[in-house]
Amino acid sequence: MNRAGAVVTIAALALGAAPQATAQGPVPHQVRYTVTADQPTQADIYYRAVDPPTWADYSHNPYQFSPKAEVVLEPGRPWVFDATLVDPNRWAMVTATSGVGPDQPTFRCELTVDGVVVATHSGPKGALCSLRSW
Picture 1 (cartoon, rainbow, N blue to C red):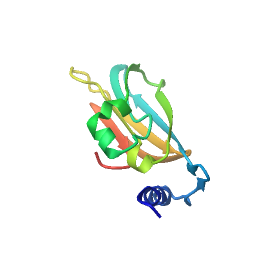
Picture 2 (cartoon, helix red, strand yellow):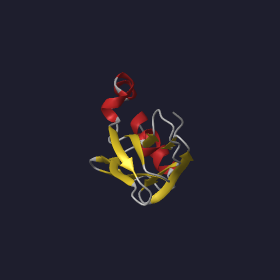
Picture 3 (tube, rainbow, N blue to C red):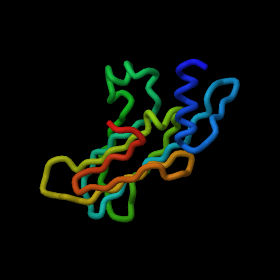
Picture 4 (tube, rainbow, N blue to C red):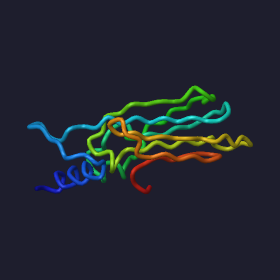
């Protein structure tokens, strides 16, 4: 098994599923990012929309693979984004911050992979949901 195959196998096992592959390669996973706030607030949300081809590509320009959404969050109106990632254990990530200012809304994020909640977090000025430590 090559290194990429081993990474996919480890990722699938960590997600609690048997590794699946087709003749075309690994089966992509459905990832959903959800961000909420307990009061109306301007939020900067960065999220991973696609798998970078290599770590070097990501390191060279992380924002190419992590778009930024500038949104106003309100209670009961979450920001939701669906992505398809081959290796969510390595790449799935969403972070929300309110930036500078006196507001301290409580942000909450949730990360699901294939319909299973795999990470949650909350904080007064921001939150980060990921399966790896950044």
